[in-house]
Image (cartoon, rainbow, N blue to C red; front, side, top):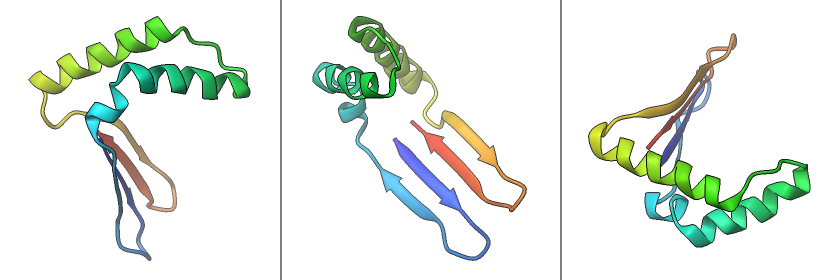
Length: 81
């Protein structure tokens, strides 16, 4: 996963997270425990299913953007799988 943040004043910020880390069952279990603190309820099995779908999509679409946001200040945020 690549997270890129663009700004007019500063050069781009790139954050790389390995895909295997995001689609791991143990990490999914940890994520569900952490987000419960923020009162967001999600089942671990459901999150694992979502991660499997993301893996399948990644195989077919190599350059898939999950999120693309542009603000009025010309800042852009792009998250790619």
